[in-house]
Amino acid sequence: MSKEKTTAIVAEQRKIAPDIYDMWLFTDLAKDACAGQFIGVYPRDGARLLPRPISICEVDREVERIRIVYRIAGKGTEEFAGWQSGQSVEILGVLGNGFPVQAAEGKQAVLMGGGIGIPPMLQLARELKTAGGEPVIIAGYREGTLFLKEDLERYGRVYVATEDGSAGTKGNVLTAMEREGLTAEVIMACGPMPMLRAIKAYAGERQIDAYLSLEERMACGVGACLGCVCKTTHKDGHSHVNNARICTDGPVFEAREVDI
Amino acid sequence: MNTKVKIAGVELKNPVMTASGTFGSGMEYSDFVDLNRLGGVVTKGVANVPWQGNPTPRVAETYGGMLNAIGLQNPGVEVLIERDLPFLKQFDTKVIVNVCGKSIGDYLEVVERLGDTEVDMLEINVSCPNVKEGAIAFGQKADCLYDITSQIKQKAKQPVIMKLSPNVTDITEMAKAAEAAGADALSLINTLTGMKIDIYRRTFALANKTGGLSGPAIKPVAVRMVYQAAHAVKIPVIGMGGIGSAEDAIEFLLAGASAVAVGAMNFVNPYATVEVAEGIEDYMKKYGVEDIAELIGGVKE
Image 1: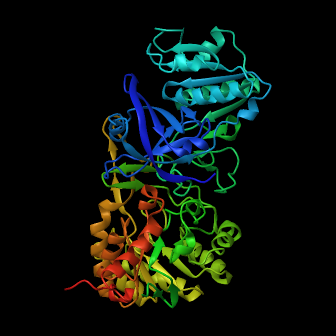
Image 2: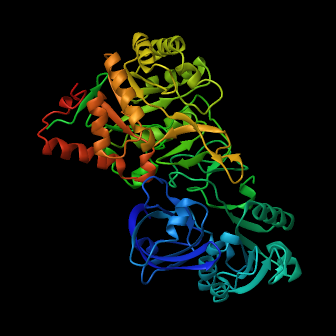
Image 3: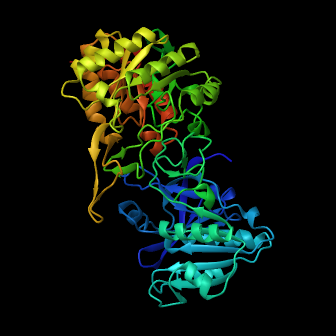
């Protein structure tokens, strides 16, 4: 599967929560895209050079569309939020390695998404369900705008945690895990670093495999610039130091492999 | 039509190279471009032993450019020899290895180790602004630059390109010092030291606080320095700094560069290197340029 920079067409876009946008892009990259992978989206403003790494939320292979759900984090994503249907945009992909769906075979998978880490859980739940699994999904929100909850319910049993207690369990994804009496045989997660650290500790204590999707400031997105590294427990085979490239060796890592 | 250029006796099929640190060792971008189309591939800087590099965040975008403070993370020269050189040797392109070090001894160790390999040229990085020891310290004072260049020249079996820093008062003084010490060619510019502050968090955008600025934002500075350096020395100059199109590359050639390198713009357009090479040919055809030598230093005074 080779990577390319290609032109995509905006199919549709809508705002689904404060600062959070849901966009479908027509692109032939959909043929190869998997859960946990990401695309680089280029601002059209030539002064903003670098592709913004955005995780794949859902893939429609039949009509070759990729769905991304992203948060406005700066001027680049602010520009994306203004894109209209029919507009052509430049993207780079498909990037990174996805979640290992086969690692959940015959096991109870619990997917944990926190905030803007929720979107990749949708395609993952879909792939796990297609593979015969019945994933449990815990979505952690800051407040009560439960974006993507209904979509997630199509592919698994969904539990909600909110920081302000306005919906579901008050607290985070692990609070919900405990409150609902859930157990996991394998965990797959994406979210803010404190959440991922807590999941790594939780999985470590219980000797559960956990796959975490990490994030870092990126430049090239293809493994050349060494901008987006994370500390690894063992010497990484590419760099020969304890620094793996999130864009190419990740973004999904087994929790024991990374020192976060 | 001739697009070949000669740098220190090494013939490149065209003047387009890659800028060190932006192209890995070619492997990552071979998914996008045919490396056979390039005059040369310049590898990521390599030291005698693996280097960990700096903490993250290591990169930040700025208006028309970007800052990086990778800190020369690299797997060491042995891995380069075992893994990257055999990969690059599959292609009909020249291989230039960028060499970094914390002490003169480090540089000499790498240079000697590469002596028996099929590497075509060495590029000596004495201009990285992101590592605390070595590197730029050798490239900001003319006498230090003279010293390290002459010591490397005594050991090197391949032609030596000294990569110069723009973070100096007078680039011509540095260019002359490297030439006087025996450098076979110069490459410039490395990145300009910069800084970005996140006003909402009130923190530095980079963990290293400062980083090297690259991209289109620095191109006019690079063209000016290439022009000055090329007129100060007789050895060839390789120009770089924000090149993303054939037009950019031709500007550098006219300023006096004998070859050019594409750096940060690979991240913006992974096909940039080959598009630059093809665009130069188109320009030559359109304007009846028979030999690329007509363009080198061809700006009208």
